[in-house]
Amino acid sequence: MALALVIVIPVLPTGVVPALLARLSGRAAPTPMPAPIPLPAPVNVPNAPGSVLLDYRNVEESFGGLEALRGVTLSVHQGEILASA
Image (cartoon, rainbow, N blue to C red):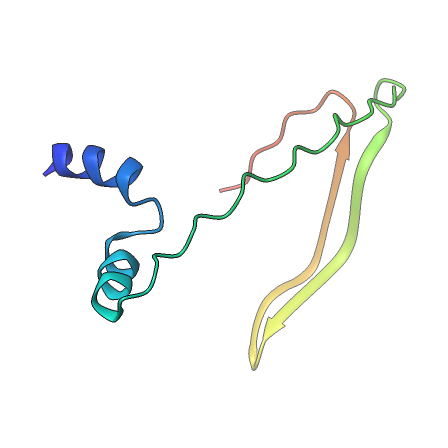
C-alpha cells in the first residue's frame, strides 16, 4: 500500500479521483497549482531584555451561550519560553 502511494503521488499530483474523472469525461486532467512565491525574510528588531513582546488583557470569548474565556491575561516578555496545553 505504501509503495502505491509513493508511485501515485508524483504521477498524479492533483489526486486519483480528478485524474479518473478527467479521463472518463475526455478532458485534460487539472494542472497542479504553481509553487508559492517565497516571502522575504523577517526583519529582526532587537528588543531590550525583558521587554514585553505580546500583551493580552481581560480576553473574553464565548460561543453562543458557552463562555470559554473570561478575564484571561497573558504577557510574553523577551527571552521567555511559554507553552499552553
